[in-house]
Length: 339
Image (tube, rainbow, N blue to C red):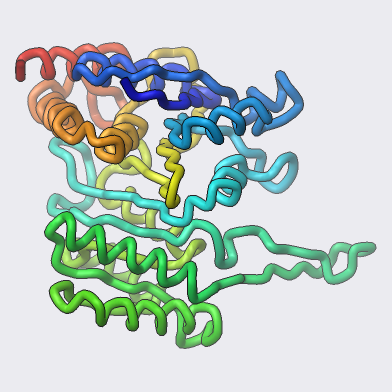
């Protein structure tokens, strides 16, 4: 039996979490889920968006599945997601994006995986007021190291080799950010030399964004720094139907947290309308991580079967007429038909 910390999160989080755990159980995976709290709900209840009890559980078990959390924009507490990545040195954010049957999207042949360095860069929020009294001028500082750059690029190349992928694209802004982005590119090219079996290219981030919306099928594995990765991974999701159909993993040397990266959608919370695919695909990355590869593939195939042949069971956001419950039931039924 596997023991995994389960953070349902805010808004639609509890509904989609229930759907995911139901499907995993139907696939025959024996998991002891340890419930934990985080996010706005935890802040309102306990005065802390990341309670110490939740941290203790992750400290002990080193793996968690997390639903969407609400983070105030511009004020309030800082992102719990960022805090977790820092605390557990979850240096690699892994975001696959691939075309799904009957899910409305601009393209029909996307299959890429984006690796984002998760602990450094501009995204970490190293900010200050230049004049605290007036707060009319602000400064953000990007931080990039050779060690972290080597680690994330190596992870991307190792993944490409393991999964039989042919190319890694290094994305940067070294033409302007010659120290921070320049260091990332320099280290990336050095790492690429260790993998002569994998094609390597590098692209400036603005060109990358343009190429992704013109010819996304030319990309295979993509690796970049934190802020660029945050933006491009959402762009990649947009190519295949949105954040509601793409999963994510945050990986460290000895800890992993798998999460839905979409919002908590409080406007539809409790209405049985939420699409659980993103959290489910995150859970499939988790199953692969713990060695339950066969179950992960079975669930993946069952989802594709439902999307292709049982569209009415799917939720409205992906063109169906169903609910969270009907989608969950349809996937469970597809799993049972496989047996």
